[in-house]
Image (cartoon, rainbow, N blue to C red; front, side):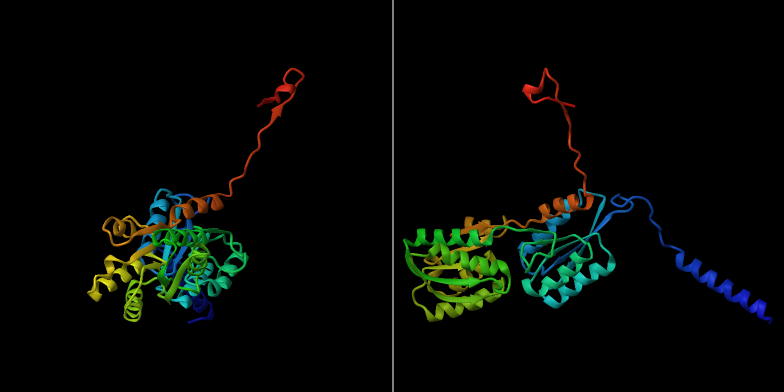
Length: 316
């Protein structure tokens, strides 16, 4: 076979491979942010082991479903910080239009989020803050205020004195820190004592185990302050399982107030109170839409004439 025929055959094979690779791929043209060419949002959830976080994802999906011009890619870090770091960086490499992150821990997620922000990708930090200010927006409730109000309520229901067990959330996360510090502010000046405390990492089984330890050590426990409702429920179940009836005398306070969880526990007489902590899922999508649209704001104009100048002119 001549060199010319060999070269022609090679070119034919290359052309065929290119055609084969192109088959089945839909090339989308036109403006971004349409049903045919939607904006892509990467959502990294730190874990789906907590009902509150399942609800957050559901709120995000429900809000996003109202916008056909949006597509949300959900990722579950399964309570692993390294996994969540990788997820954020994967979103960067995929070139998503916006990233939403609900961080497991503040410090480890700070750098990956900053990397996305530096590359011009808007980043919404949801629920738990990171360090510094290299992100586009934070959406979350005031955990210090919630903790402080829980402390004030504790003072009220205990008459200003008593022995309290504090079952903390993950203390390397900002909500755990703020809910503790706020609570301490709320009980300041009272005779309430924290006789037992443990980092339960937001998980009910951990809270149940730690409450068993507290019950075995302290004959007098007046109340439990849990950083979320699953931990408060775990503490209640531990007291009930003890078999001494202390679940009827100990007051259990939680945070989250999901209708199917904390609010139901209050109705059932398991918790004395729960404080609402909104997921912010719907608000995150609303904010994302505004950031992605980057809508220009057109200012109006007025005409001022001798006959209307005293009245502030006339809007056109």
